[in-house]
Length: 202
Image (cartoon, rainbow, N blue to C red; front, side, top):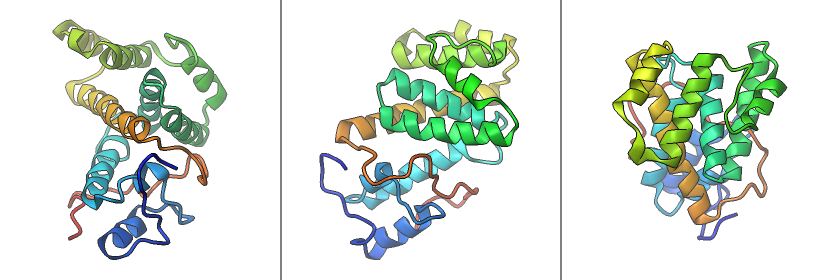
């Protein structure tokens, strides 16, 4: 499951047990990417806080399926199969709920520079994700200006940036600690409702 010791949900008690109950999916699964934090539960709280804020907060304006597409893009670029598989499944579910052709969008992500059915605006956002992931030190004001010209406002650019940054963190957590999908159902999600009070549970 990972290269380091992990406390499973069945073994968890106290603070960790309480957190596991908060982050488990509807069918009781605690994803391995979350269990790997078990020796330092406060880092699990931090991970969930940023995950919920950047991907699943009602105040975000970019479509959730598109944020997932950005996450899949970053994960593939980082060679993180775990995150790419999970979030491709989540993206597919959201696209179907929006009556879109999920297969066409996933096929487009197989290309180095995804085209249709992504709009020109969405394609530019994915190109920003590629550049920020591959060569972050080369991002310039002109890259942000191009996003504005394509129709992103500054708040949406921030949303895009934060999803890219989150997946850089998540991908390195997974890859750096050898997290795999053993025992998991792919694409199950922890609770995603807004929690403006944060993840400090004592």
